[in-house]
Amino acid sequence: MLIGIMSDSHDNMNAIKKAVDFFNEKKVDIVLHAGDIVSPFTAQEFEKLKMKFAGVFGNNDGDKPYLLERFKNIGEIKQDFFELDLGGKKVVVMHQPKFIDELLMSKKYDVIVYGHTHKIDVRKNTSVVINPGECGGWLTGRSTVAILDTKKLTPEIIDLS
Image (cartoon, rainbow, N blue to C red):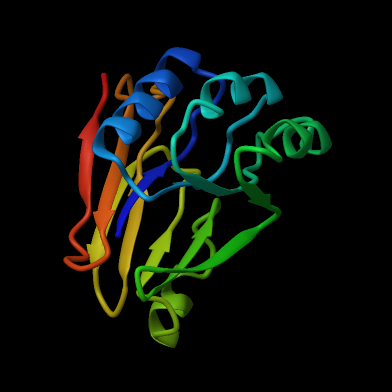
């Protein structure tokens, strides 16, 4: 199974379009968003995804009820964390990098996805830890996403800038 991973898109419609086009081109099976979508109008680009979508809210997501409404036909967004079984792997998605050390020690998840810091973080420990960096590119000037094959568990960071 091929997973697309993004975070911190922060209303950058151009960057979101590039990410959606990339994920569609790669034919990923699902896109995970680790928070800070921000505004409901971004659904205009996300609805062009040709695969499943799952995400979590971040600290900058504004009108959460309307975000849920706009994304109801795109995919599911949960409050703090999202647990999924993807390609036989246990995956957790969250925004803030809270409790990562504890999650690693628990050995409960094969993949831990987070965002918030806008910094790329790829580690392989007892679990694979992935922060794809910021899709929006506002802070670093780089628009990045990741893809992960659940068979290989080797994340690849993609620069869309």
